Length: 116
Length: 117
Image 1 (cartoon, rainbow over the protein chains, first blue to last red):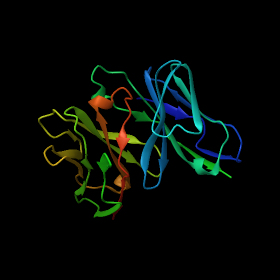
Image 2: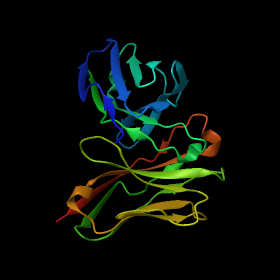
Image 3: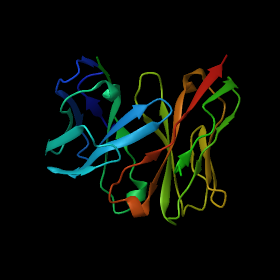
Image 4: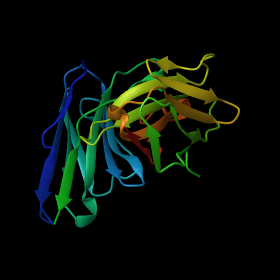
């Protein structure tokens, strides 16, 4: 079974703090993703990575950065947390396929972040 | 324009009955894939079913089937014989071949399904 784990299920931080969200997958997947989920908006892509040290911006990268030093680990960093970053954060991973439309993403359990 | 539209914010169904969750999509790309995910209250997104734009037959996975109507750009999820454990949020998602440089999915806003005993 594919296993994607996230470092915390719930996190409470203060405005201005630097926040690290960690994601680890055990299936040797090339692609890893960070999404943000808000009610009524579905999931929106923050960043994705297709290889170690490679990253690309998604739809809402402002206020976030990422790090991928090892293939199995993809970190999301909130440089200076703000209240509008209170949300559910979901990490996902997938194999790199020659037929990209078929790539199935597998998700972690999510981190519910509250910024006070 | 939204790429993925799920018009039903919430749905109720009686246990053991079938239910259809609607999804329409918008793309000019002839090659694309459509996915359905289930999200229980625990938060994890669970992959249910996949349909490719060139697939001739509707996808099926156990009690899940996808009613794919290409000309109408709809990809409705049908759950047969609903169970209490089917109560969850359901998301429709799409990946277009032209956007595969990003390899990310575009999600709809979701439908909350509640199965009643």
